[in-house]
Length: 273
Image: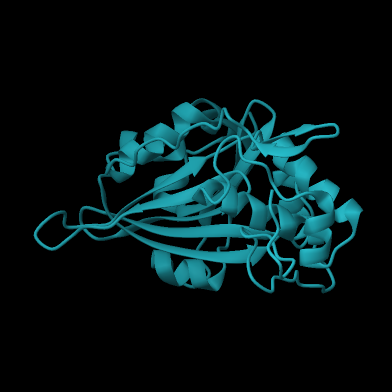
């Protein structure tokens, strides 16, 4: 592709430099920059990416770093590489499914259909203070903790950690969670879901989450925390979800005035093709 007289590639961000610090993977940063530009359409299907030399010079990184980033893009099915020709955006990029507003339970059902589950832990324990306060659990009172890994085929997608009050979760077992999602178990006990408060933030992967999600320590993860209430406005579940942004994203449906009365969110996974 053409390079202007300043030496900067037309589609590369002006003055871009990657952050060099302990625990930061340069090839992951470059992967994220290029992936974001591909998904935004800066490089449409079939377009050539800047060559390795241009990327090295623009971002101030080594050829090895560039090649690792391009290899990750190829593994995700975003690009195709041809010896002697360069790297091109895949012409077979899957279109994102249209976002449709759906209820909280419908979103949970969708997640259950699209992924498989591996139960990591089920136990009765004292919840962290912040969780206990949000669930209205009294000091010293136990709750039920359930951790699961959601995946598709061999690709790990998200780790979920749920706390529920003891009276609702005392019958939850590992065997049950292998067969039924937690929300379904709660529904069978007569729980009627009401409002949901959701917080979305970013954290760095510690060794445990890095291992479970098949990534490197220190890479950014999305963290979604949900506090779920029943129809009587009693908290019935505290859920924390950790996602790898290389494979998953969060869509929000924001109401306009006079339209919907609530914001709906949905987690969408983009595993390697």
